[in-house]
Amino acid sequence: MQASKPKELTNESLRGYYKEVRAYTEKLCEPLKIEDYIPQPIEDVSPPKWNIAHTTWFFEEMLLKKYVSNYQEFNPNYSFLFNSYYNTVGERTLRHKRGDLSRPTVKEVFEYRKYVDDKMLAFFDQDLQKDIRDLVILGLNHEQQHQELFLTDLKYTLSINPIFPVYKEDFALVEKINDAQEGFIEVEGGIKQIGFTGEGFHFDNELGRHKVYLKDFEISESLITNLDFIEFIEDGGYENHNLWHSEGWDWVNQNNINSPLYWHKKDGEWFNFTLSGLHKLNPSSPLCHISFYEASAFADWKGMRLPTEYEWETAADKFEWGLRWEWTSSDYAPYPNFKTADGAVGEYNGKFMVNQRVLRGASVATSPGHSRMTYRNFFHPHLRWQFTGLRLAK
Image (cartoon, rainbow, N blue to C red):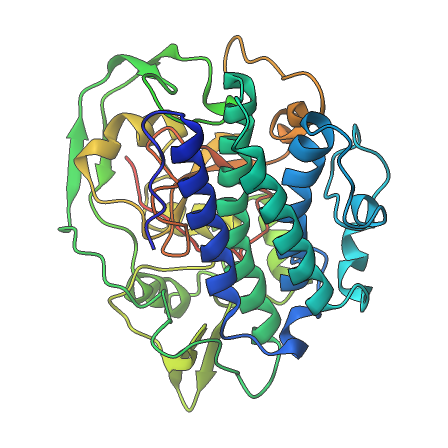
């Protein structure tokens, strides 16, 4: 489904956009059974029930409670239960305890969504100021982020089940082939402009636009494939400490890492767990579910490197992107003149600008229309439950 962002921030266009985005979240829920909504096997992934409640919490907490006179909360406990990391709002459920919440029930969470949706649609009848309309757009982009998290988190949860359950037939996602040609694109260096410019939505971490100096470089036109990475494995890539950062080498050994996440070797052949079950690995598909450590080690094995986020953004109009979130060598840090917004929305990005690496692009699990060339995703270097891959630079 394509959620078409309104070109003009009218109340009516916002109403349509709101309904589309909210409906897509519920469409993602359609293949689930009640038992699928609850489990949380590790801290990094959240249960589907929590994801769909938290996105509803955002609209109630950030908009309805602030801007609707005499607003009656659906349930006062939900402000605590479904707050993610907003200290400004108050106390919250511990992240690793989200799967322990058997109550409220799934039925009650969907009633909560409907209650808030009805209040929001009535809210659009008011003469909303631009800053309020902008906050609605932020909330919808926030929900689109959680639509992707819904899929990535659910995939991890299903993956630990030894019977390899199917979320949805014909929904493997990772098997889509990269149409780009092999080879490298030459990019002339010089002073480049980095960061968001123009009209339309963007997150605060894409500002402010600034100049950087780049040397001439080359960047691969296509993403690294599964076959490329099999060659790395067969050449002893996971056993050669010379290829790894010190932390990466510790991570490999402490966790017995010897292949990308969701790969399984059976009778000498590689298989891959997908959202449509366990499939034989497609060697031509772009590599997926790797950590920054693995991406960097592979690049070193090839005698190359990962691009910086500035190189990636400068060259992105010259290659196909959007199949994988692509690791870069850049630390997640503020751009010059970055300013943290006041209030709870100021906790959205800036507080995470430490000990993380930037990923660029989008993935096959990203909601349509959600990303752009200046989008800055970010994760800790050991994480790989997202749809992450890489391309090379030199």
